[in-house]
Image 1: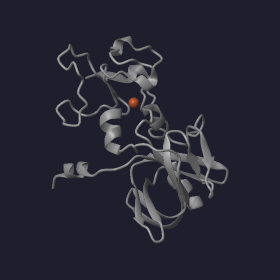
Image 2: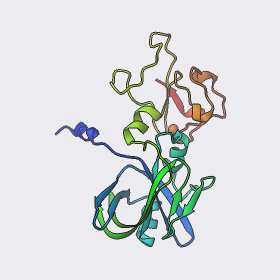
Image 3: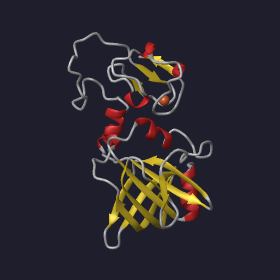
Image 4: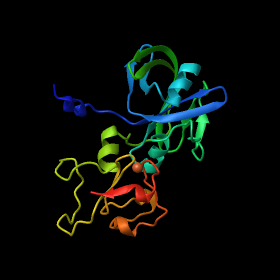
Length: 227
Ligand code: FE
């Protein structure tokens, strides 16, 4: 068996959110699909240790905010790599409550779905929540972000040899060292910089201000290792 075959699966990238009493939470998920259309049924797979899992299990409600390709890395990082048990993930985020109370992200969202859970299937570490759609709308036109785009372009983890790598026009110019976040694996590529974090393309890692943090997980600069 070659488990690398699984890398050929394609996914989207979403904020899946829920509520419990007056609390709200959300997380990044790549596993939302439509199951059938009459009636409109969707499903999402959520890790059983996540706070969002606890909230969906309790309220039997979830919302899916479908993110655009332009979503900044640090916005995605705010909903991933951190737990709602430690941080208020919706602080500073524009959102509105859905019809059933799950928060719908309005920043960087192209469209949203809100569903009531009709079935839950526990599969080892994860649960599949099956939900009947109660509301859905398009917020704006745009290209939805895929999991591959997030990994390869946003996080810059595509090797130069890969066909999907976005080549720099001056590939032959002197290479600057890349640095890798010890916490999340994000790779800082000096040629790309971190425009969302205010670091211009062409900035050496050594020249980044000390208060800069990993755009994916928020780790400090001293958590990076040269690769
Ligand atoms: Fe990181």
